[in-house]
Image (tube, rainbow, N blue to C red; front, top):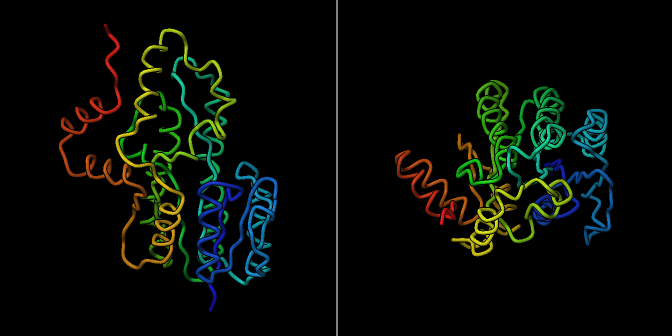
Length: 276
């Protein structure tokens, strides 16, 4: 029987790549986005359904799930990919911006999970894949708000994985690394204006120079899509699926070394000395 996946945030980037990979592997794909545009996909397959879904609007979430089930009979996998990136200094980041980031990156994930779980519980199986970031493995400067929104999803997903085992539902994480086409400017740029004050300018300039000459190859959309496919289909109890060279490097550094070594290496790689 053909399986069905629902993916949020598929208009571009990782979400689009995930949708296309699952289509090529014979799945039914419910590709959702705030403003549906089927033309982003170069296919007329009847296994593709493009639906409106805004993760900050529960009504659109529930309708997309209902329409997806009506079209394909069940939803076997949910991928929470929609997200907003942002770099800023904490002291310059207003509450309204922080709440906007959390509304999508964190509470949006909570809402979609809460909406799909009853459906998966009734059908007796399912997989929830929450896409976070390599920043949850190695937290870098000037991304405190973004990191907090993604780290919250990591703890949420781990706890969720335990409580859903009873119903044969898996909850898993895909942790993409930094990618050249998924930088914060793409969807977070307007929010970042004025959020790095002059006192941070020298540090920020040096830091962004480091990020422009990243110590590992960039993560590709194909790597994220493959990691998502593994998370959606593998048996066993694996929780985290790092995607990309930097995510795997940071996972090794975080989980296989001491706290002192981890922090020392993070400062060496990502904290420029501008004291002079």
